[in-house]
Image (cartoon, rainbow, N blue to C red):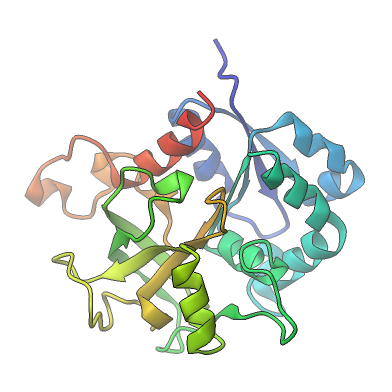
Length: 259
């Protein structure tokens, strides 16, 4: 019997993590469907058929003028109210890596103020593409996707993943508003000073993911869909198989929210 929870996985030219993201939601018990951005632009009402919308990772439009910028422009100009209404109806929105970049640039995660956008994602401190595994700690149980999750071990793969805030006041508003959802931590799980490579991009306050004030819109740079089975852990042959993979719980939480 098919699940009653339906997930819209948004596709655009250059997207390349859509299939594994759809599979992750399927393994968590949902029914997934791919919808191309052009189809959604033509018929925005299609979104009403779903409970979860996901902006997957990849290189939307080749990141030709900046990571996620073209897709964010399409969503921001033509679909902002559609996606906002989707969220306001109590539904969930997830952005992974490039999808996180899109959510930031549309203002769906952190709205702009009179001075513009208070946060952004920019080039890694290293100035180069980084692909490695990192340890993360949930910073906020307000986020639906992270309920009952403490530590996560997930891969990152990005060149523009450094999360920066405009100033200390903007960072304080995020923290006070319970919008900081996920942080990079040291391999032993400790916070405080988290140097490279534990913080792979130099993000302010070691921030790896944020949510909106409702906890229903969540964006993160790491890829949970790439750690859905214990054998995907890079050291499973030496350390033994874990009972479950770290990324799996995130998708389970999303689907269970509607169960």
